View (cartoon, helix red, strand yellow):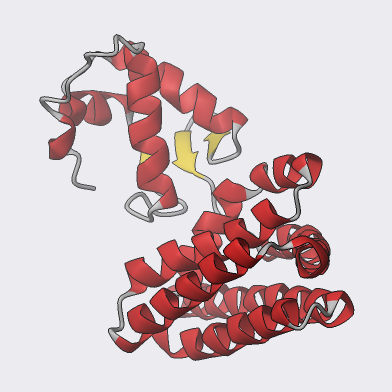
Length: 232
């Protein structure tokens, strides 16, 4: 993990140091710099980040509360692994939420929102053609956020927000296999077209299936990784 860039960070907003360390470690986990199963050693992290052990310890405790870190007795803190059940549980909930969001969007999306969704879809396609995984991750996030925003349902948006950490980790895993991104590109276009046609039933069906397909792909990727690891 390269954390040297943390040094020299300007704390002009006077945020508590534990919060700065927390944000840094959280981003490192979500971006895949800190891998599932990797041990978080307070002394080492404190030295690398140029801080004392106290803010590191406090940050790790907050990460544990978010489910991004697990504490193992007599062993210490580790980046939480993603079990197949964890993945399936999140996908099960997300498929319902995304299906509902697409359905509502087909009825409620304004012309301006449709234009924004088209632009995001085009940018995603450009990133796909450039084999730009980071770009695809960002445009995929914007695509689904645009649909959610257009539902005008604050409770749906709030509930979905609680899944964002897991969803971001899933995106990183999914886009690690570039060849699968073509399927996602095609499914985005199908969702977009259903919304443009103002077909809430079709939009709901495609969006839910889209999420389920992603979940199945992630489970397959993780199973292959674990199988390969067990053979080493």
